[in-house]
Image (cartoon, rainbow, N blue to C red; front, side, top):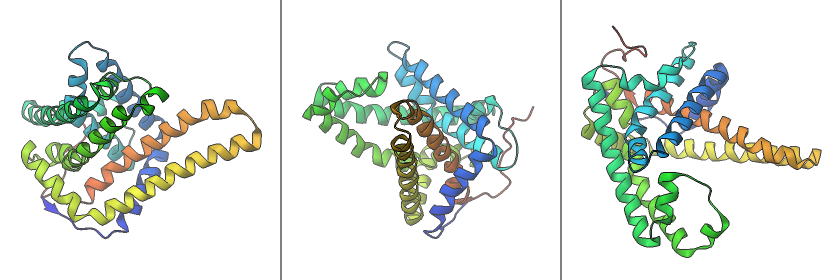
Length: 264
């Protein structure tokens, strides 16, 4: 495995490839993302252990979404079981991705614990159990402080785990080493990832602006009410599809990457 240093302009191509890949297989990728979202939401409904279980499975699910984008980019139709591909590759790879998930759950729960010490657990309950963010919550200074504290603590976590699940799955890197290599890759390609983030901010803003313009032209509040969710959903699927390209271009494999479908 070799780390690639890419020019900053590559970030624009990563975002563009995510959009392009979505339109190759929009229904399949939407289905994968909705399966991911609904499954994790239902898991959080399980008392006591549901939220932690969902966190443990996040790295495996990220591999599944990236595998779906890889399939779509290759002109194939990603099947629903693609989402669980990281858990279907045999005992050793499955153990590795679950160990990475356990590490992820521990560090995220530690960050949530810090936020709970600030606001008494309000933000932690919202994060783990889900629910709606109300105006009353936002107006509470302690809740805002807890939210900002968690966001700051989650930033290094996201850097360490950006490429880690894919490294474990496709390159067979051990969980701890994958966190190190992911962090190094992010900082070595920080310019490209910065541009990548700016492009996605611009895409999100443009999508929201388009909805506002349509509402103003038509004068229909119904469009605003029912149009926001599909736009946010499609934008999210495009973003998650683009994650595959950030990984693919950041590392060169010593041999051909493992296939999507597990071998018998």
